[in-house]
Image: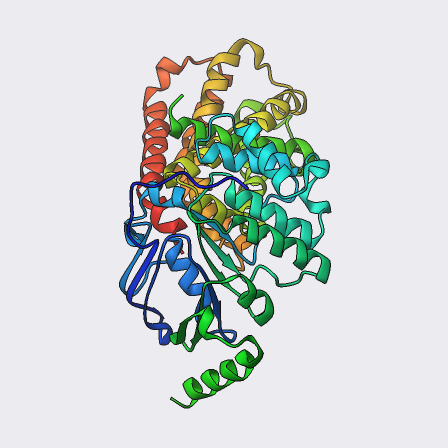
Length: 248
Length: 226
C-alpha cells in the first residue's frame, strides 16, 4: 500500500478535549479526552450505543460537536477545512459506493473529487492493491459484502490519507473475508498513517493496535497501550468496565 | 480547469453514467409526460378551444409532473449506500454538489423536453418549427428555475420518510411564478409574438431563476449538514 506523504505538521494526529454531543435529551458523548500520535493504531471497543460512531462522525467533520474541541491533523473539525478532508479516509457501515457504477467508475469518481491528477491510473492502482482488479469493470451491485468492504478501502485511500477511521469494518464478513481485510489493514498501518478502528471483535481489534480504549455511555472507560492488556483476560475486563459504567 | 469545475463535472459525469446504465430516470419521466399529455388530449375538445391557448399549459404540467419523478430520484440516489456522506467527506464545496446535481437534472429534463416537443406538436397540431429558437429559450429558462428549486428541495426532502409526498408539496407552490410566466410565454410564442414583446414575462422568469439559484447556494450548506 502507498505510504502517505510526509507532513510538515508534527503534532498529534488526533487531539480531543472535553468533546460532548447531545441529540436533544440524549447525551451521545459526555466529555471525551484523548490524544493519538501519528502512526498509532487505536482500537476502540464498546457496546452498541456507546457513542463510537458519533465520535468518528465528529472527527470526520460529518457532525458538529455540542461542545469541546477536536483537532484532526492539526485542523479544527468545526472549521471543515478542505485540507483536513484530504488528510482523512473513512470506512463506515455504508460503503459510500454507487451500486450501478463499476468499481473503476466509483473510485475514479472519488479520485476526481479529491482533484487527483491521473484519476484513472490512481483508481486502477488502488483497486489492484485491494485485490479487485479482475472485477474492476463489474457493477458494485454484484459484489459480496467482503468485496464491498475491500472496495471501500480503495475509496478511502484513493487520496492517500494520513488518518483512517474504520467504523466496525468486520461487521457482516465471513472468516475468509475477515482475514483478507485484516491483511489489508495491517498493510495500511504504517509509521505515517494513524488508524482509529471501532470494533466488537476483541481478537481482531487487539492483534493490530497500539492502543486500546473502551467507550461506554459516551465516556472513555479505559485508555491503555496494548502492552498493558492481557488478551486472554480482555473480555472479562471489558464486561467489568461496561458494568461499572452502567452502575455509574 | 479549476478544481471547482472539475468537481461539478465529476458529479454530472457520475449521474450521466448511472442513467446510461440504468435508464430508469429518462424512461420513467418520458412515459409519464406522454401519459399526462395523452389524458389531456382526450379530455380537451380542440374544436372548441384553440390549441395555442391550452397546449402550453398541458406541456408545462407534463414537464412539471414528469420532472418531479426525476427530482425525487436525484438525491435518493445519493442516499443509497450513504453516498452523500462520501461526497461530504471529500474536499468538495457544498455549492459544487448543488450545481453538479442541478446541472444533471437540467440535462435530463432538457433531453426529455426534446423528445416531448415533437409529441406536443403532433397531439396539438401546432407548428413550432418557425418559433423554435424562442421556444427553446423559454423551455430552458423555465427548466433552469425548475431544476434549481427542485434540486434544493430534493436535497431537503431526501432525509424524510415521506420524500415522495413532500417534494411536490414544497415544490409546486414555489414554482407557480415561473410556471405562469413559462405558460404565458409559450402561448404567446405559438401565437407568433417575438420574445422582445414579452420582456416582462422574460424578466419575471429570469428573476425567479436567479432567486432560486441564489437561495440554493446560501442554504445548501445547512441542508446537507447532518
